[in-house]
Each structure stands twice: as structure tokens, then as C-alpha cells.
Image (cartoon, rainbow, N blue to C red; front, side):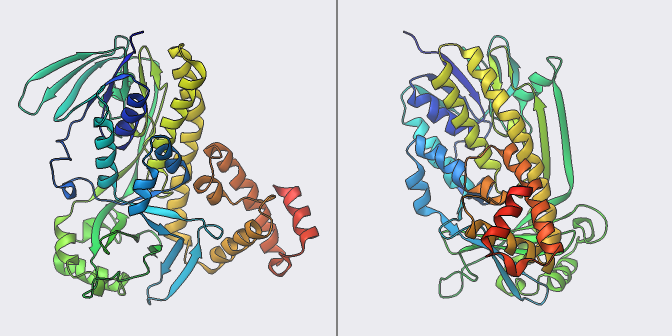
Length: 444
């Protein structure tokens, strides 16, 4: 029997992974990407911000046989390392012993996924094709190539994986009866770099995500295999302590020395990077439905989120595994496959979008606060002492496959328990099993 044909618009992480999933199942896939072929480019010319790969993303990569290869080059990060203004350090583990997130290169991972997709003779990759129009009901698309040529394409099904500013989602929005919201943080981001030391080693602890929390702004740093750190400065666009006030090298130097004095000596190209690297925007997109006619949305096209829970890529990859599950359960009824996929993912991807905003406030404002550190210590100890009875929200999100909505709901219950322990100064009673299990049963 002739297999169905798919058009995928967008060759980023979600689109290239989905191309592999469908290619392995024997479907004919045409994947169109607006950018040039990164396999022929210097990948450094593409987005360099590092990503935190965790359990959900690893599961998807395991299904396509790529997890071992990617993890071989990943750097484990076992916790957060907070830097205060005096350069003092405070460490906070992410989970239990053996639980960690993995720093991976966005460009490197995208490259490997494209290579894997292209290994399938039924998958064709088309670069430098900008999507101009999409007919959701007939799975027809129109593209403009970089040389100006117009290309019309049709298939049995159309998948939009073309990111936060998706052209396919625009076709959904204009098709009628579509809920849509787009909201920007008042903060933007700029990338900086900490290079390897003179003797070729990491300049800081390589197995931690480094955070410089400064109230309404912050900087983070993730390690790279070449012994560098990719640093990202998050600040308001306008107002006090904003990008708008840092127009000159002198202003940038003064600001960085005042707030990140321990990091500046490690950043010899800081001023050059600051003055030349662009300021990016941080957007959250929510929309519904994700399925109409013969077309679906997946990844950032359906649910763009800010990066502060380290789940953007993992959520997109989990979309692919859930869609794969629905294909295994409901084929040959494609309408049921797509409808069950959107109903399963919508509440969960909304939840991780909200969690990402919550975590941004936490990272920016709270991680250096003694009471916050006390709360996190209690939470960590409860998870360690009573692993079958208590799960922290971060652990549920990062180290399990618990639906995001369930993790969101669990976090509210956990907060009530932790507040009771702190208000009643029960920190020293955490090993009182009878007491703690009774409290966990009451609140959680």
C-alpha cells in the first residue's frame, strides 16, 4: 500500500526530528527549511545558545537511535552554582545522586538530526525555501527560494514546525475560530562567552549551570565541549539596568564590573561581544487548535516558551514521541491520531510555558535568597528521604515523564507542605519519618 506523503515546514530541532520519526516509519517526507543547509555551513553561524537536554528529550532521541551519540558529547550539569556580587558561590543540586541535565549545542544537535533524516531515501531536504502560503485543508504549500523562484508543493499531510514566528500557524490563525496569544517578556537576552583558560581548561566548574542572580536581571553560563562557556545576559530592554542604557563600551564595562565582577576577568572579548551581538526577544505563544484539515502544528509553532526551565527543546521532542504514540495506537485513522495528539499536548505545553515564566522569576530574584535556599534544601531532603512518597516539582518536570500539567499541580501542593515546615521550624525533624509522612499525606 502506498504510504502517505508529508510536508514538514521548518528544519529546526522539532522538524528534523519529526522527519526522522516519519522517515523510519516509511512515509515520504519533504522537509523545507528557510535557512541554508547547515551541513555545508559553519554551524557557528546558526543560533549558538546552549540547550539543556533532559529525560523527555533523551527518550525521543532514544527512539530514533541518536541518544548515545548526542550524550557522548554532552556535559552533565548536576546543579546550579549561584554567584553573588562579591563572587561568593552557593551550590544547589538539581536532583538526587545521579540525576543531572545535559548541556548540548543547538547547532550540533540540529546538524546530527538533519544528517540522520537525510539517510532515509524517502526523506528529501529542501533548503533556502521560505514558506509564503499554506492551504491547511489540501496540504498545499507555496515557497519562495532564495533565487526568487516560486515552488508549489502538495502532499497528503502538512506539519508546521517553523518556530515561534510560524508561517503555517499564520494560516491557522486566519482560518477562523482559532485561539491565539503572543506575549513578550520585558527582558531580552545577549550572548557573551567565557573562553577556555590559557592551559586549555574550563574557567569554572564545568558540571554546573552558573547563575548570577541580580533581582530584575541575571546572567547564566552553560559549558561547551571545547572548554568554553556560553553566557547569556537577561535584562530589561528599557528602564533601570537595561540594554537601552548600555550604548557605549564604557557603559557596558562599568555595568558588567559592578554586577558581574567575578566573571569579567574570565571574558577577554566581553566588550566586543557586548557591542556586536544582538539583543534577542523572549516570546511565549499559545494557540489552539493544532489540527485542522490535513495539517497540524508541532513544537514552537504550537507552543513557543521562554527558556528558563530548560524544557523548550524537551517539550518539542516530547511532542514527537506523543505523536508517535498516537500513530501506533490509532492508525489508519489519521484524524483520530492528530486530534488525540493535540488534546494530550495542549494542556501540558501550556503548563510548561507557565512554569518557564515562574522559573525565570525564581532564577532572577530568589536563588540567592537564604529563605529560598532553605526551602530548596528541605524539598531536596524530602525527595531524598522519602522518594516513593514525595516528588519535587523540578524533579517531576526534568527527570520524569510525568505530564507537565500534573507537575504544575503538584508544585502548588508541595509549596503548601514546605510553607508549613518552614513556618513551624521543622527543618530538624525531616528524618522523623512518622511526622513527615503524615504531613506529606495531608498536603500532597
